[in-house]
Amino acid sequence: QVQLVESGGGLVQPGGSLRLSCAASGFTLRNYAIGWFRQAPGKDREGVSCITNAYGKTYHAPSVKGRFTISRDSAKNTMYLQMNSLKPEDTAEYYCGVVLRTTSYTSLIPPYEYTNWGQGTQVTVSS
Image (cartoon, rainbow, N blue to C red; front, side, top):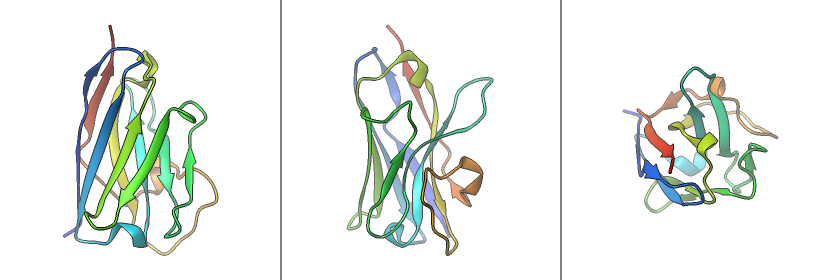
């Protein structure tokens, strides 16, 4: 059974950092396109960062480029989102997702492309 479980969210002051984790089971992370998307209250889902292939090619939304880093640990079958220099506009529910089909991407994966995702973890950036 495919399962994704996020953790690491919380309340942080502007300029602070958080690292989100996403533990995967039921499939092998490095064999598929994976990533993170977020949804703020009253807004549409927004792609944040992704790894599109086994070689580790990454893409980021312009709003987070230079501040967020996505990575994966194949031994732990876990992906991460390191978030630095957080801003109040980063406040949202963050989800990790996977595209469980054979496909390729040459840009940030849109949220609607993910076939499976976790329950989400809340990130609040506020003083």
